[in-house]
Amino acid sequence: MSIHSNTRALIFTGGNLGQWALDQLSSQDYVIGADRGAEFLIHNGKVPHLALGDFDSVTSDQMKRIAAEAVEFLTCDAIDKDWTDTELALREAIGRGYKEIMIMGALGTRFDHVLGNVHLLRQAREQGSTLTLIDENNEIRLCTEILRLKANSRFPYTSLLPLTLEVKGVTLQGFRYPLHDATLKLGWSLGISNVLDAPEGTISIADGMLLVIRSRD
Image (cartoon, rainbow, N blue to C red):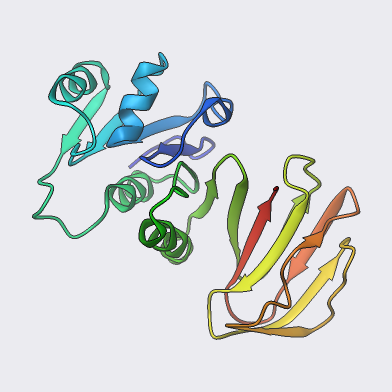
């Protein structure tokens, strides 16, 4: 169990990664490299505190380097496992006591993995942690009661999509297109592409789970 309750866990996984991901790091972060995400970190001169996965996306030489340079190295069988490498990394971060977790590179070209990673937001919340998925063009969070957002010029659009069949009592403050005590239903596009005009906005809901997606073109 981690004793660093004031620090974040940053997970680098095998999706699209770049300088934008490295820019998220601070010296206080606990850094996890999942499979190819660990190779990305080491290739860019960053030593992960933990490298884990089946490492089927790296060469044998890359795997040896990861094992030699990572502070801690955990490997598993590529076939005989129940979870994706990203979920394994998330479970490790939660199990080590981290309450604020960010995953870099979870939104790549494999839509099955993308959707599975989005669903991890729910698992994290149920375990008492806050998870954010980030790539170069998107930032995805989960709102179950109230969420405050500061304006971010990098992500000008904010979209709201239910993760449950319905999300009730949706109220927005500070947004160009307000909602008050609205209901968003799975399959509806009512919450797509809003804009935060105020320096800070508030999203509150009465019931359900709401995906909050900030993005840019």
